[in-house]
Image (cartoon, rainbow, N blue to C red; front, side, top):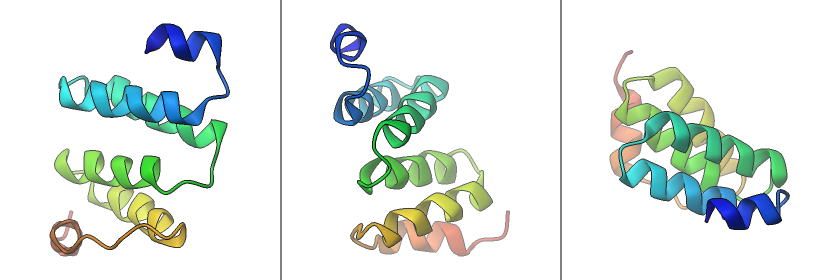
Length: 91
């Protein structure tokens, strides 16, 4: 996947997939960077915003999680009640 992104650096889907893979491998910093790269390549899809919201919520970064969750919802992401409960907590 990394090679694919090197060949197509404007491919938001490739960055998003790398973010998902990195997150599953526990490489949180890499995942964050890949999700942000996906947004830079194409700011329209909701997926990278939603995944950043989840990543931040799971890391206790509630304010950032709220920000990215709201951006995901603005881009027509499906609301996630479990994530919303996490975001209701005070940081």
